[in-house]
Length: 88
Image 1: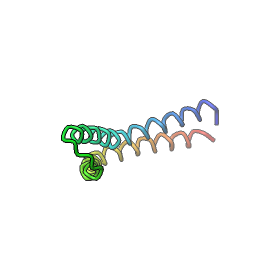
Image 2: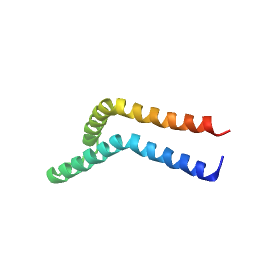
Image 3: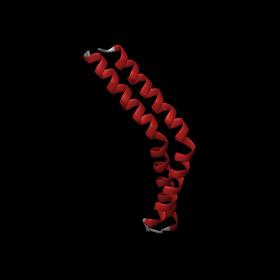
Image 4: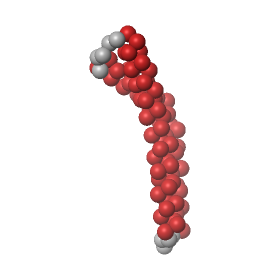
């Protein structure tokens, strides 16, 4: 296994990890910022108020994007299997 192949595999691994995790992370970030702004405007400093909306929004995003995430994971798995078949 050459050094270029190892770098390519590592790059693809990081790429697919970021792509698969992005919907959940971006949702959590956006909802967190919006709730923080809302809390600042109405001057409520209760941290537990942000927990339930974040969990619910992340759950909804997960339910909507799980098929897409699974397809991306299968795509990555096929890529790794093709490399394993060609490298001896």
